[in-house]
Image (tube, rainbow over all chains, first blue to last red; front, side):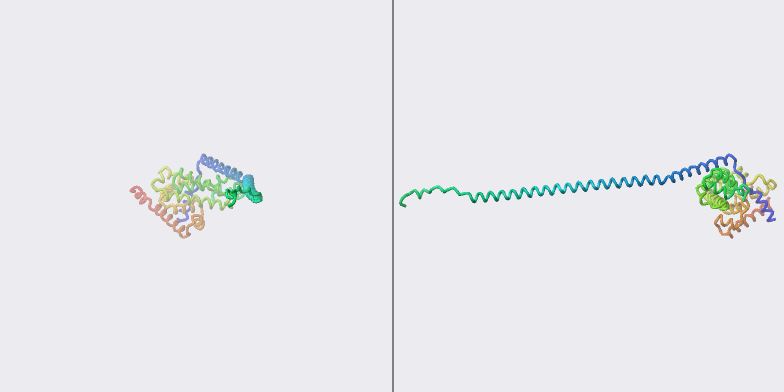
Length: 127
Length: 188
């Protein structure tokens, strides 16, 4: 009885096929999806090109930053040199001014002082 | 395994994995009956079964690289179909699940012969819990033994055996006392 029931069950539960139209649509959809996946994989395979592009972009950016930094450093160095030159000029002017003052003092001290005018007392005889 | 599935070889699977559309179409033709029938008898309507069949094959397409052999493929398809269908059934209320017209298509039209068994089996299928229904279908539609059913549904083998015993018991009762159940059916 049990085996009979089980065999009848198997017969009743034989797999059934879906409609042909559905099968066609299913195959079309899944194979299209497979195609798009393959395309995506193809795009992924072009990865090295993309990597090279990013690498180039990275190198270019690094170079640009290096050049910018170099330019900035050079400008800073020139500014410092300018300031140093300015300080030197000011110092030179200060020293020159000191020397001139000194020379003036020496000349002033060496030159004869003008004779003083006779006092009225000297003019008086017998005093 | 049905005849169409048996006709699909590991070599063709390798081709399908490599992106051969013709091999993939062959794979679908070979396995769609099994997937569709499981989905139909688990979910109860043609529309839901078609949707699920499509989802399963789309998912398979994304996972094809991980399928090692034709045996693995069959195991994967049965497992994914059963789990997805059981998930759907758990989310839905039973009331909206079937119409009488749909129920008629759950049983194979080819076997002829035993309309009483078909009627009882039809009723039984719709009354079983989703896991019990999956067990019955994997046993008698897919011809899996209890060990393979337990692996496929990730359930203890004793649970599988218990589901089978209970389902067969109900069916035997229905066949032995058809009038009683008819009265019950009419009264409900």
